[in-house]
Length: 426
Image 1 (tube, rainbow, N blue to C red):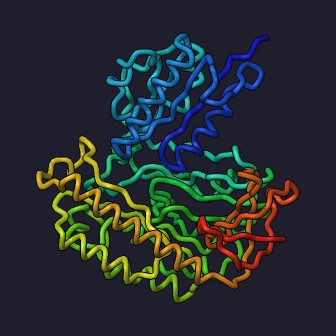
Image 2: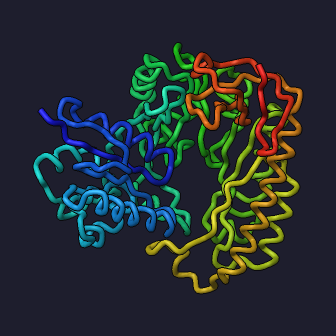
């Protein structure tokens, strides 16, 4: 029997990638063959993102690509953009199925029965949690442990797209983690919308989860993805410092270094509190990698606010920044604020912060020269080299050797090449 060719394209966060991987496994291998999205397929599935206007543009372009590859193909959209703009997306030529974040787990049924979802279920009323993990790379897996958010920051559309915060119990989460441990995966990256909120509604906690994950045999490394500063407790930091599995790598959303802007964003901390989190980490783990998220050009951000942000960041012991330029998300509180920042000013501020980030990263790498680290090498072969990451997320490359794939190797960090990557000469 000829198999139906199906292609996936995922946009946005690590959470989306973990979910795509789990959803793809729902398609019977005897009936379906998964192919690259650039190939001609019978079905194209686009896992959409709505965190920025640019993310939505990329999703629409993917629809255009699919239509061009095979005008007769069935096109299905799922995820956050699909959740928020169901009716508009159904009007696009070639789009057959649009599923939000509740119904996307039933996508096989919609495709095989040619069903059309006429009304999107209210994601804010759902209490169901679907665990997920990626297996595309046999080295690392994005492991979804939490979904949704109750914070409703004024700039963010995600709580409206993914619903309220929810998670499995620790026991159920550990069962899923043991499935990953039974594979060749060496490292898991804990993902979610607001992972620090794990277990709150079950009377449990994120600290309780990582303590149990730390005990699992078969998983060598555990990396924590983005965690809110107000939920990154002293106890979590202290446990990570003691753990041999949980890596000294923190990704903490700041969003602004101006207390005025943080308040307008409806963030739950100020710069003094945030600075205290950084100092706590560095006091216990001096070599820890600390990355932050930052939004520039938020409505009402004055030159003084930007300078406060720049100075605050410049004086913090950070490793690098993820800089996002603010864009209105219809339906959010911030979208209604009239005091918009000029696009040229936003572009200038973004450039300044990217330069600062580059300088921070170079300094962080220099500080690690001479250190002995453990690198988990991945399978990619780029111009004869393979790459991997240390515990504290420093990138290392070495001449491609298939025997090193998915191996954790002791490396002394000595030489940095012109691309800013450490070179390991075995």
